[in-house]
Length: 384
Image 1 (cartoon, rainbow, N blue to C red):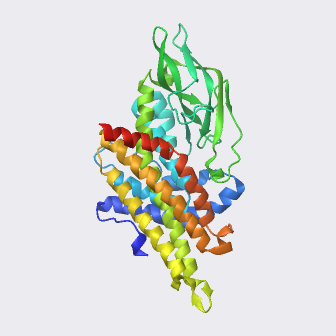
Image 2 (cartoon, helix red, strand yellow):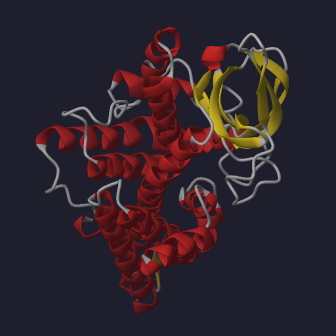
Image 3 (spheres, helix red, strand yellow):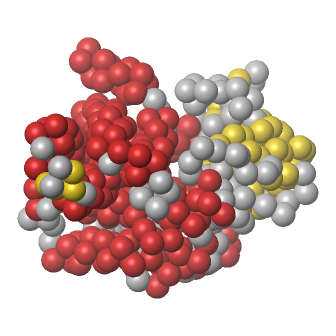
């Protein structure tokens, strides 16, 4: 199926080996077990440790390092893992950004406590930006912290859609903090799970993605030491927006992985399913939808590749990742819907992956900004 595989010619030998490792890992350790995780509604923490043993867990902790994989290589890894299961690919990306924050902004004592365990896949952190009533407005935070005369903080508020929240050992929490008289800005805190006043909710009952361990977080008068503040007023927001922009690139790549996996399964199914004495892939009514879906996949991946090659500090990067994320999530849903129909009633069976990937593709629409939010970013670039 070379017509739907990504191009590796722009990767160096080390990056190709990393992507190849991700592909084999997904085939051996992720795809065969993904349906079971979903059915059991269980976060597969053991697979994260296995990924760490193979160098796939947090491989990008220091993106400024000379030997760090390129953004294109990272996108290829995201595609390969998502082809196995979004519930593995997505936490990989999120834990990467959690480790960025700890590595770049935490005091040495916190770094020494958390980073080695994160690198081994032994603990996860929750990324807490979204709030129950916030919707697409990432700046409309009601979670707030006040500092006392001893420098300690007291944090109160609620967070929603906390990925891996059911198993996370700590949380990165965005909250309003004082920055001037009668003014506030958004800062960033590290909050232990076992801190007094922290309550982790039950996992959301979702139509798909139950292996992600998504939940809500309630904080009531949580007392934190001065060093728990990683970034002060407004700097926290800047970091959050930086994370979101990078995440859009990899969400686009994951959407490509979901679509590719569904397309591969459908091509295989229609090649062996016979009707009227012929494999149904020989019928034009099957061939044309497969051809259209292949075109959509290739176009989406090219947008991802273009975004990966754009300097991340430029306004063009924000537009490029918006194009990639919007288009890839849209064609993934459309293409997987077509693939499921081509498999007939069997496409509804959980023994096939296409239905699981279809529902996962819906999540990529919402993750890190809906398509409407991406249109805002694109429109802003047109006026610049």
